[in-house]
Length: 333
Ligand code: G3I
Image 1 (tube, rainbow, N blue to C red):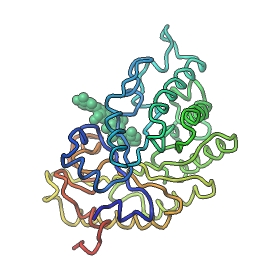
Image 2: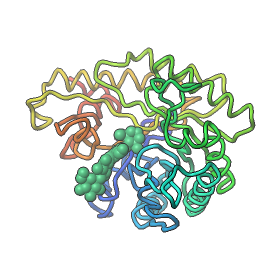
Image 3: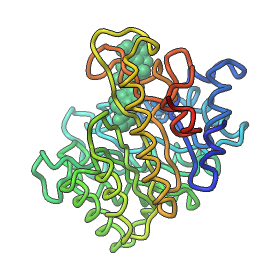
Image 4: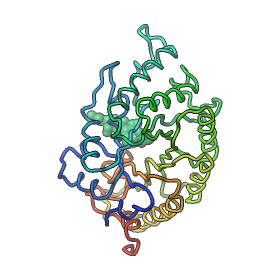
């Protein structure tokens, strides 16, 4: 069964992809994407270092391929991401003398970047991660904000400006604040309070994105339930934006030889988690995996090179028990 059909009454079902996965329109990767997903996120191709590597020199070759693929196949396209501390070229933060840029210079660069990128895909990208990972409680800044160069130069105002510029560029796009570990109570509270402050000021925030990179043991399913529940009072959309479930041993080289008990454990955990997502379907507008298969996953290179089986399809695009747990649980042994 097609997964997007299984969840059609609940939420969009999505995946992140890299451009090489759709280079061949009728290849197995593209076929799999078209069959199972109705929301698409570019894993890297819409980030600042990809779209504006040098000041004022935009490159949309790779992002166009992904957005065109989504439009041609009737798949809703998410934009990831406008403002992030990572994968952003250094020139953004410095002036021509090599000093830290002034707030005015930084905002001018932000405005041009956001206007150009969001404007190009107006009407084609339905939702944007306007800011990504702006919280890091360990940095000990007020409100738990990450002490990034964005923050050092402009304080919390950079977040407000990012949303305003994005809204001006496409008033119909849904604008998200996206972060990881949003199930951890302190960070969750910081995020909740940040969104509340922004909304009280009239900043156009439409949604919160929970990345949800999780492990085979943690967090507890109940924590994911609480994570969604904690934002319901804000009257915003919620999306699970980067779901995957890391599971590995150190001595296996193919999914078929991966211990059966771990395969089943992962499948059952995915099922329990989707039961929670379904329960919150009135809040959740999309659930998006950070990749479709265990070959094209960032977890095979991060934090170290090792095999990992975090997704629903294995490294040969075969459906795993994790897939069957969602598509038809009666197929589990
Ligand atoms: O394209 C080059 C290639 O030419 C080169 O040969 C190769 C050698 O290292 O690197 C390739 O670039 C890599 C790129 O992914 C494309 O595969 C970069 O090194 C690598 O750092 C980059 O990693 C991406 C990571 O963000 C960077 O922070 C992952 O693909 C991407 O999945 C990951 O996505 C992030 C989200 O944006 C935010 N949330 C966390 C998530 C996972 O880390």
